[in-house]
Image 1 (spheres, rainbow, N blue to C red):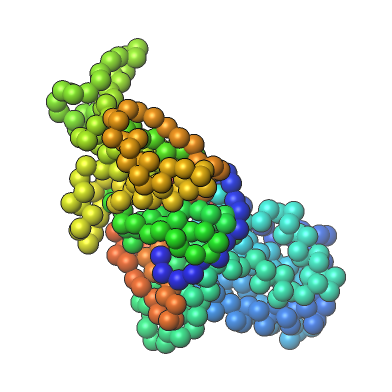
Image 2 (image 1 turned 30 degrees about the vertical axis):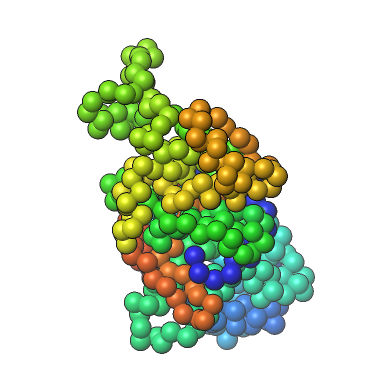
Length: 393
């Protein structure tokens, strides 16, 4: 993905998530808003378009009317609700539920207690805008997309919607990705190793077909397997046709099929182990010709990675061994073996259809799974509730 990437640390995968949007505060719990704080909130909401969001979602007209009317009680209620909605949207995204297709990342939203704490701090003179701005992503891609949005004319709705959609996806992402991590961008058909904000390796990938799309998830790469066995998923067994050359047995009433290591193995000669509930991982492939295609959506969901031996050598470098020559030697034995990484490396399989470049432009990628539409429509749907459960697509 173009552009510098700044990061810090994160660890655990969360397969399915519930998201909560704060309800309106009961009157007894509503803090009293000073006029100066309310005016600061209004000024912040008026500029929320720079984040790709709509001021109307945060009751801007009602805020103005309440302050003009001198309605202190009404203003405090509206301002508190607006502030809490902003804390949810800025920390975890405005678009929720089924509009997030195949989304299985850890939730970046702050919890209700932290939202109430920020509200109390803002009311005690902590600065409304400062508290809200601190919730936004600081990732270089988000910053670059925001700058591109500011430079795009209002008349270019298609480009603005593309940028806004991808800014929103960055708000869904964990704020700290890890000083060392892997990021796979499915529409770009790339996988990159990032160290201290710099891409140190970027490889072409083959991802899932439109019928078997690659989900968006986070896992930890923990090991590399040379000459892997392929445990054939039940959903694929019926597609195999002949079982010749496979290890076949029954476990109770279920057929268990494995493909032994070798040059014809569907995983190729190397697999990166990253346990997750979706059985998605990065691996080699005997179908190397597919990497020359411009659109590379051919897998059952896993991420085939070009020159994966070099990719694995980068991941294994902190162990002090396993350079490319040692990896080749291990594979040449034909023996199935596994070696652990020096430390788990977070892997993020994401879906960005636009990326900011260092010169202020953006690169657009084909929306191969049609996931932009629901996000765009939800961003443009004023006042819609975003209390829901992340879709498994």
